[in-house]
Length: 323
Image (cartoon, rainbow, N blue to C red):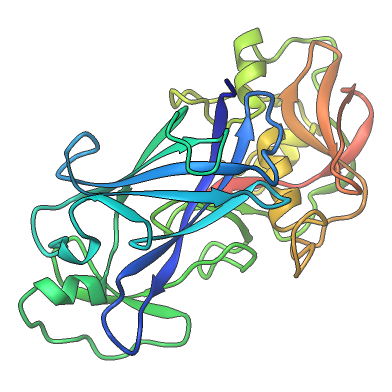
């Protein structure tokens, strides 16, 4: 049976009918198998649970879905629009008993299947205002609000305006281009707005920078750390690709092979329209993922191929950071 990797989850918005309070939340995920290959045009089954209190708390609502991934491995569904097995989505009291968590379980082998081989749980950090308002006492609404903002309930239970962040747009305060958002819609990954070099070596030739375990983990690492939160070792040699990235600030770094591939597919030439919002050249870019003491991994932004190359060879460089 395939093991699959959930690359990202995004709560895109909330839908309503005839002006009533929203009763559904849009959800998207990109699915990959254990070899990091996209699971494309494949029927899948998914179970979605809303947990109350903690990531292992009581399921106040559970529903199942049948879906099909598209040519990019993307599956889309509406939470609240599936087949309920526990509770009702409209019956969730968002105003009390929080925090709430979203748990997803996926069967990548068949449409509507229930042999779930991946489980992910994410805290819902911002409850949509219209859902909260159905079960909360009346509160004075804040003034203001501009295009691109939504009205949400903060941790204190009060309504406030928040800017909607989207993949492909410039971050309003940090600069850079957003190429990944987590389930909260408030945190993710940024790519620098321009290349840091059109011809820099990876550096540290003849030296093993990463352990064998790190090399494996760094292919799919995000935010510069492995799954346990430990920093992935990077080359700090003067003039190296990573050194050019950290020159922007300590929070910037050379992207892993997984992050580089995600940039290619979300804001690069491999993205659906509008394509290449990141302004990448159709060339090879260095990743931070080491192959051995003499080679490191790179990705082509002219087709999406991945390969290893001598550390002393020169490639384009684009820095990333978490936010």
